Image 1: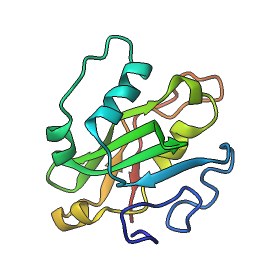
Image 2 (image 1 turned 90 degrees about the horizontal axis):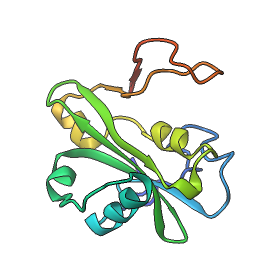
Image 3 (image 1 turned 180 degrees about the horizontal axis):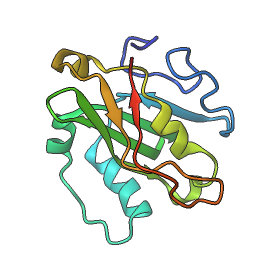
Length: 152
């Protein structure tokens, strides 16, 4: 799944969709399943979500099939959590981009950075993922129902 064998996949790796990160600034590392601490995630959530309360993310991490992170200069600036239902479906939660990094395509890059079914998902028989966001028209208005994205 990953070229480095350590769980990380840079946005420009052949393991992810071609062209990922093309509109993003250099120096941004988008990786799948890189080590992540609760402190890092709390810092990002405090910046991105007004009123966020410090959380113990241990139980969240334990239930993740995979996590996609983005870091600039070692600082966590983006996050997506992929979780499953224990069956064939997985879905995205907590898609977050630091306010200083918004409006540059990072959120789209994080969502697209699923390199295929993660090992945990494949072992559980998971073959589909859905995003909890509706497709958007060019005007930004919701234009339809949620769309599944196949890993196959």
